[in-house]
Amino acid sequence: MKKIVLLVLTATIVFIACSKDNKNEKSENTCPVVTVSMVPQVVKDSFEIRYPANTVITWFNKDSVGYCAYFAVAGIDKLAQFSNNGLFIMEELETNQEGQNEDSTATAGKGITGCECDLHKEHD
Image (tube, rainbow, N blue to C red; front, side, top):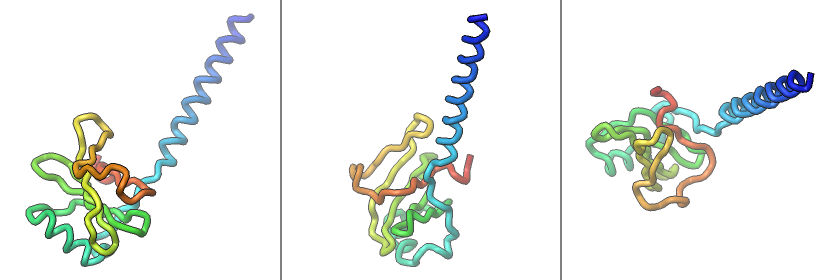
């Protein structure tokens, strides 16, 4: 009888723990995708000056205080952040580890805080 109670209790704990993990994934704070027409011209111009040979795949609105441009260079996914007035903030690139990004501009912690621009939001 003790074994059955212990087994039921263990199964219940595992079920509850897994249930909480799924809720955490759904509450992830990702930035919304926006159309190119919603991005201020000064931001698009700033991207074109900084990355003249590249095309933005997806634009994200960064908590209404800036924008992120998702693009690829030589097969490497990159994310560039700009303020609403076109000021370049930082660049991130995808590392080999799944879900890991690296600040390639040595400005870690200086970017816009808030929602996260997801490199694979629209592309997985």
